[in-house]
Image 1 (cartoon, rainbow, N blue to C red):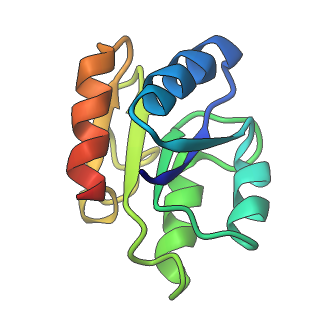
Image 2 (cartoon, rainbow, N blue to C red; image 1 turned 60 degrees about the vertical axis):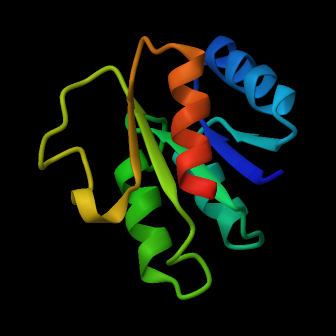
Amino acid sequence: MANILIVEDNAAISRVIQLALEENGHIVQFCKSGNEAIDLLSKQTPDLVITDIQLPGKSGKDIIEKMRSENRLSNVPAIIMTAHTPDNKTFPEESLYQGLIVKPFELEQLKLTVNHCIT
């Protein structure tokens, strides 16, 4: 069981992810914007962060780069969800995140990626 932070501005996607991960025994928290996620991460340390790249406020790239710059969060695994092709402008360096999920995705792929990152 892991404490997982999901950063996603689409409520329907967030809900589907929540149900899938809670079914596997995980505790799930949500943020709808990058700014909200950075604020939450200043107070809490999840076991895993799953973030969209394009978000209101700060981007998923900003969130991951902020995590890597802080000792307390530097080893927390991060998974990127996106409907876009990775590029150098909008994505962090590959070494900064542990998984990539391309939308639309199968829930089984999500579960496998999460399990890989938290074990």
